Image (cartoon, rainbow, N blue to C red; front, side):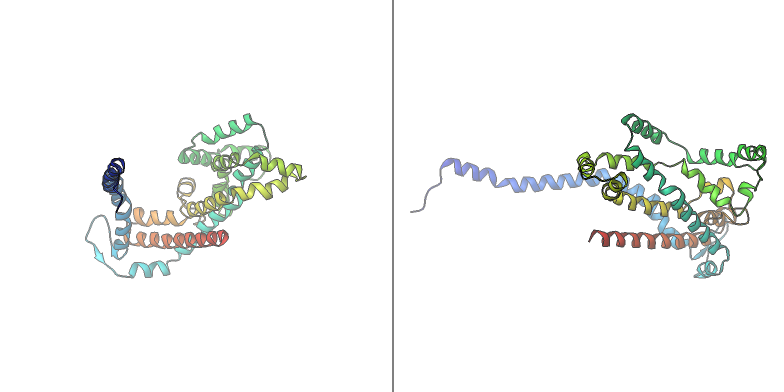
Length: 309
């Protein structure tokens, strides 16, 4: 004869049956509210990000101007970009800017952060506060343009009083790009990220290394740099992407001169669109830059996956 369940078991079973349904209804309700609250952000992203991007691919096949009729020109704008002698110059200057940025300024906050970790807590806090202070890029660039002025700039006056030759500063095509990159030595902020990462490292690792007789450089090579490697790889990729899209510094300091020495790709896109009113051709140049950046991102991610595996 089958056992008859007692009353407590029956009540527990009756209470347990609707639980999955109730939880499923709650999850569906949360999803609806999540989509409802996300809709404004999604709508703004679609209107101000994806829609202009899609329109760029449409306008690239047109002879588009603000006033006047729109004409479809097919692949004419792309063919023009392939034969435009200014395009390789702008690309070369953009890559040159990236190279100078990485060689001159990218490693500075890493070195400073490692050295700060060997100093006192008060020194670290002071430096972190200085990194927190916002430095407007436009204002800083205008100040450096004044410092570089070949006639009445403080650096030109100092060189004159020291009897040193005035080599033209920003008017010198051989030094202009270098002088544009140089302010980044003091106008950098990634050091705050490196410091925050290093403060999360257990001090027991450094103490154990010191007990084993490891020198300062050995600790940096075996503990500090492996800790910073993921952050360095991400910031390096962002530095390359930001360098290829540089606009503010060459536009304010030299406006692409002298003799196209500082004409970057984004500055050439700006000129094509807003100086010559050739929006279709400017979109083609923007698409070319987008493809170059996409290639860098894909290569970087594949290299990162190879290191992780």
